[in-house]
Length: 237
Image (cartoon, rainbow, N blue to C red; front, side, top):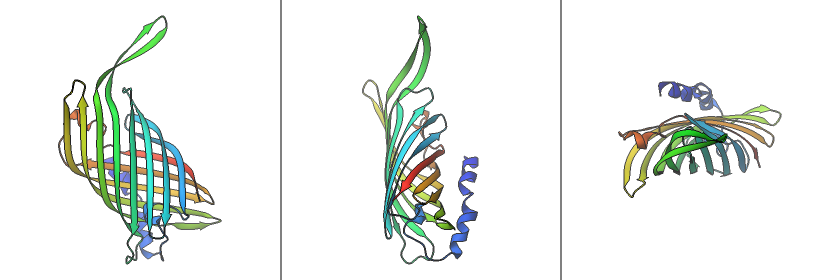
């Protein structure tokens, strides 16, 4: 946890330069380079799981909407971890800094299972799993985001940003056989990233960390509160 928070805090030195810069453009505060929108694809991962993701962003003067979906293949688990997210951001009009208020919703679900073992029959490998049930989590974050687009010449720009959030969530694990366990709670999160744009081409990297504020049984906490890293390649228009 301490190591991941140090990684998240690294862009502070860069973002401090934004305090002395001039007027900000539309939605650089959430890491979007100039343009009407952006579409990107890439790789995503967290501890014990890797996969792919797709993102879409649309921005107007003073506001933006970002949609994101990822599917991760978890180690020793048969089902993918699927997460969909929507985030809206509104620029603070009277702030000299490029600050935004953000609000969103995130939905995660997967079939919770553990790897039970492997067997070979006539040279064919068979994997078996213990299936415990379906896991779902709804998370609603509200936060503040600071970012700045630095134009470095020849159609290229750098857009670092840092976002802090407070979120409410409810998670549910429905066990096979009919019983279920639900837990509501609150938490905090940090999300940082850097976009590199050159003409129409964009590379965007993000690192996110969350921490819930209540104790949970290990079966509900297994895929939560770990850093999530994404690296996307896309186009802006």
